[in-house]
Length: 462
Image 1 (tube, one colour):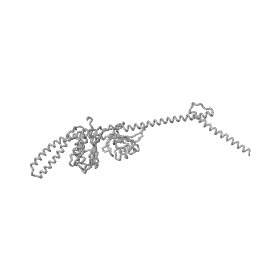
Image 2: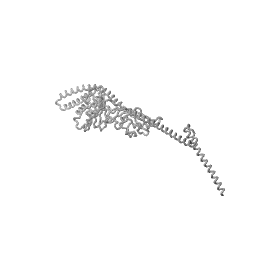
Image 3: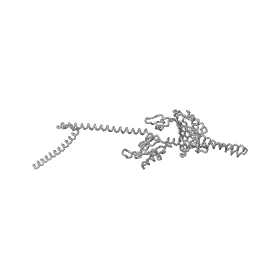
Image 4: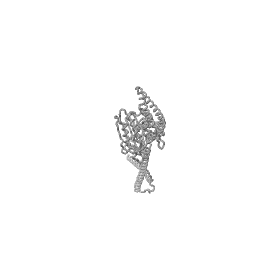
């Protein structure tokens, strides 16, 4: 029994030695593998032969690895910083481009949200960039805005516009016209990222074009009406002469005298119309001289408002920085009188009449080529849009307003909505302002009042 136990012990001992040998084999293989890897880090190092050399070799190799990793990390950091700087410079460069161009630029992502809104877009659309970024087109401009309709068409059907002239609708956008193009916004691989809208303000150009065409038509009409007016005047003079003779021969007939008196009154009214028509048909050649614009405005008001106690005046015409005004005093006063009279007649039950004069004089030019025309109001416009020095005269009333469908007719001769009007007042105003090289615009809302904006340039030769 003792012999058997000794045998079992011997077997266990032998198996233990064999297990230790196997474990030692695997340990040595791992060490040799690691050593080979470490040696591959720097093949110039001598292979260590002693235990101490092995330890020093491992420590030195790990130090070399750490230093190389640090060098790689520093190099990666330099590359990352360089890439960030390049991206920042590119972003600033793109911002400078968008800030400098005179055209409005808006970009929308595929979720139809606004991602870009440059300075020109702010000026044309009367919106601040911070107020619209991240909004949808409808959220920023309203459902009836033409921009949103065209944008939705581009997204849904893929139809894009090129140089299309449209009238914008919305708050503060009365009679605002733009030339607009829409196109897909894609990355370098051709994947669509959204849609870009580029537009240019054509309001001034369109207005000048329309005024030029109207000026030609009115010149032709003036020549034709001048000849007709002369013929009418001759006939009216003959009729008036015979009526006066008839009046003398019917002194005793009271009823006949009343009829004759009515005929004479109507003839005089027709003569007044003929006189205005003749004046309109004559070419206007203003005699330009330096004038006191404030004084002209006050004289025109005195003549017009003296018999209208129910009209409340709000006058802001003493601008301290008013540029010199060169005009024909008589003609300009006549034009202003006609506008004031028109305003008074639109307020039969009383109201407010505001007259404001301000200089149109650019004062601050930024590096981006943007001019601050009215710094106190924060209104910035590109240099290309500046008309030059001059004055704006704004006449606003709280009267009945003008229906939108009649706005284009108010400067036409003989057009009037008044029972006793001749229709020549505003036509003559228009002709006088054009003769001064200026412009006249009208903004009106039916039932809310009308504003006439008269711009008079400062002639460079003066």
